[in-house]
Length: 170
Image (tube, rainbow, N blue to C red; front, top):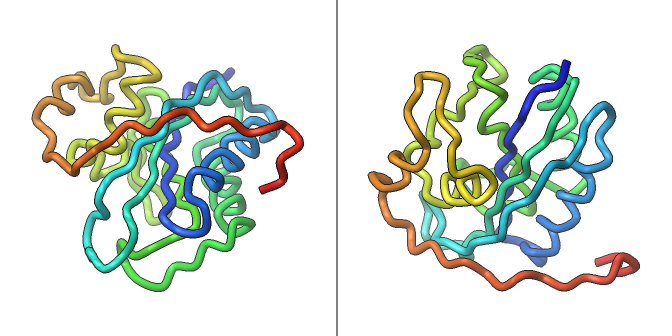
């Protein structure tokens, strides 16, 4: 049985759009997982410390037979392969992959909280999700479109599509 999983992507170091594009390719190659779609990328101010570059964010829609925790292991492995270092809370990063939604499941344990607890406050996560599916709701029934209308503004700017050759290794 497969589950619709929505992954938020973010980067503000070392070619952020390239980091996200490579991450989407890596998500598409996960076992027992199909990449349904990817959102456009957006730029926005950082949340937290402002002494860092703006972020580039997006989202990927996956259909997966993996459990949420096994998917999380894969996401963290991809982050690690991109040189992710957890030095400062809400600090700069090469790649951040967050499991935002996992079907209509509620998960709250020591390793994982789904839906992501900050989702209602993050326009840079909500808008890419709505680009993928404008009818998405939280497990409690709240429409993401309504959350987006109430969400604080983080200077979200849609970026033009990137054009990368399939042979481009950057």
